[in-house]
Length: 477
Image (cartoon, rainbow, N blue to C red; front, side, top):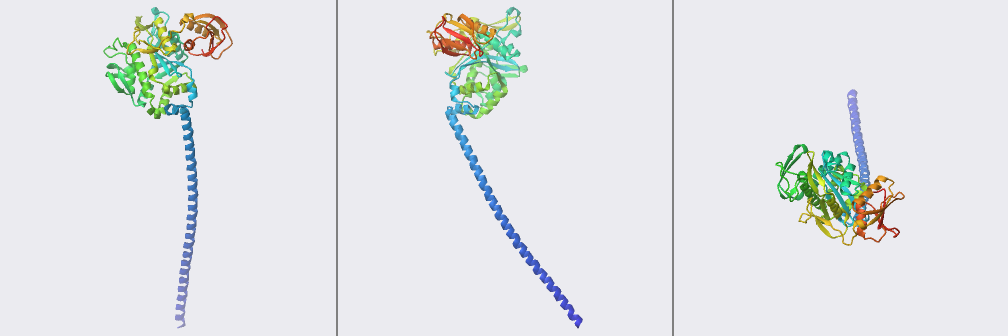
């Protein structure tokens, strides 16, 4: 009996222990759950607080960025407005110049060379006058003879061979032909023309004749019909490089065959491209156009100088573009084709395109021999009847260059253009060429001298010598 009564006792004790353990586990679980819930809630509160702080910081940063953007827009808006607004104001601001600089720029002269496979098919003298927004463009036939004697002429006596020596050799040859004093050159690869035309969405141009020409060695395939049409970059290159068809036919003689016709087409095309590039809608392509220039244009014009003229050009009206070509005749020497420049007629053309300054316009034919006007003639500025004959203008010329050769070149240049150099001398080094008016001469006469020398400061001096002008040839000559 006693034995059996103890066993249930043991069982009940064990049951109680189990029950107590269960209760403890439940209590502990409840306690754990409550604690974890509390921790979780605390963590959520902390996270929410951190999130709110982060959001506040983000909002602050966004507000600061927005204020900076507004300030930048306002700053550039003010600068663009000060720089004239519109396309010119935007470009001025982008390149880092201002309207005051561009307003007071002197005339700039340069030799422009169109290059393909290291050959110069296009040779042009360009003058741009920002103050009166006028420009002149003179085509020089690529076969122009620049050697010493036609009896011993070789291919290296053609002007287009000079670029292969150096751009400076090309400048020297052109200066000799024109009597000018160019210092700057700008070489444009034909790829630049293709890329420019494609960048602005093509160019509408009136192709003067049917063109059918192939030359695999120059990667040329020109197949165009006569008439007004939209040209892409490749077609535009074909138009400006075309001379004759596969069957030997070329431009009609009244237009100017072969090189003469090509030069005339090039001048017309340049005018068209300028007109269509200087449109407001092309502002979005400024960076693309700048990159094309960087990659495919080479020049010795300093960037600080070039950017100011590039901006001034935004105001240019292509109706103020005067164009012409050096006159002369084509001939053969030693089995080679040459263009023999007519020296006396060339002086007249150079004078009318680059040295005359009054507003009277005459016509000079693009033909090498004709002097009559037509619908396709060059616009040029004539000579004022109030101007003195150059031979009657007496000059005193002083050497401020420190170089006898440079000074002699200046004397030769002035004499070749008909000026009467009555006195020569030497003075201290001069950074800039100075043209001193001694006899109250007209502005036109002063500007003609400045244009001929392609540099100079004009001023007025005392009438202390028997000359009309004293010219100090400076280091900038």
